[in-house]
Length: 434
Image (cartoon, rainbow, N blue to C red; front, side, top):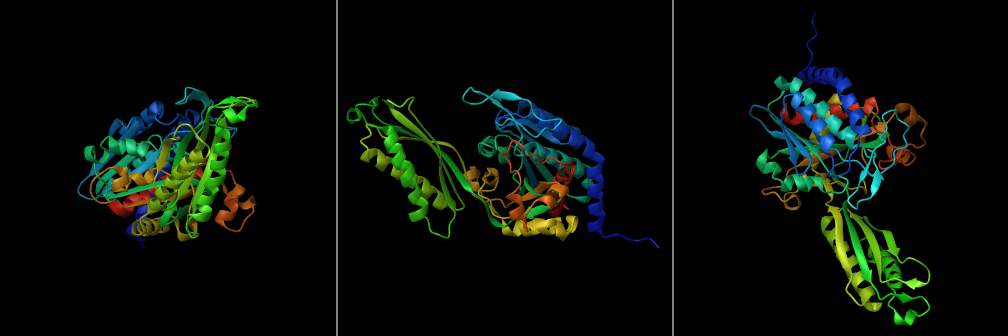
């Protein structure tokens, strides 16, 4: 007697069959991208490789959106528009993974310095998964209706690429999605998928501050205005923002990551430079904290007799990532059907930041109309053997003992993670288009 499979189970098998059919090519693409990383807004070769791969699958591909971004469309009749986003830029880190296809590249950064390059955050994995999902969706188009919109985004690491693509008319020139879907790798168990509704990732501002003094000889401090002393008071006083101005139930981080002044012991310098990092999960509170930083800096400069007002420059910033709860539930159920529930985990809230939420926030993203629901989930990247030997009872406990993104030893691109990332994107897209 012939067994008749349910449409869901039929589609699950079809997705996995298509992932396997194209896996060798996607893995080869991934290793090529990993071997030749490029800095934010310099992803010329990376975007060309991705565009060619998507064109070969029958997508309408446009290059150069927002600088080096790639947009690919597959129109398949009437239905919703679903956007899948992957990022593609690398970091100024010297790779120490020892991989056969490890990066040996270097490039000039925005300051004209020669720096080593590495995909230490897995953006090569993310964009390869987008190409893999594109192949699955192109092969299974009889199972879905609507428009699939794929984004290969530049410059996530400096929070610049999403706004650059939106400012270049992303939704006006191509399509306005009904939902935006994306993912990131984490050092959880490879083959697992983590979800979190609501507050998921922090808003972030990186602020540069210049404090002006009046330099001179170290033996005659009374004839100078010492910016180092002012800067020291600023650093100390900034710690009171979280302790005394932020409600205790909120999570806010204020970090002075750079304090630079002077050249030698007996010279009082003319200025001091600070770079301050702020993270929070509430955009309104975030703006209040940044304003508090500026207030404190101005007050300390006044107290220290600074001859000129301090200067402030936002290096980069992004808003908090708040996953739409209804959309998260829809995607989680689709992933549970495909992967089985035991391969899903509750992702803890992260203090890390992303520019992904600009694609859904109408005001911050600079596009008209209502906000667009979005879901950002996480795929595990630690092989099973390493995971089992890592101490800890929970996902969070174990991750504390593992290399994290931005480590020169971090490598998320094992085959299990690559397969899972492709399947997760395709399954989530089919949950809306199927």
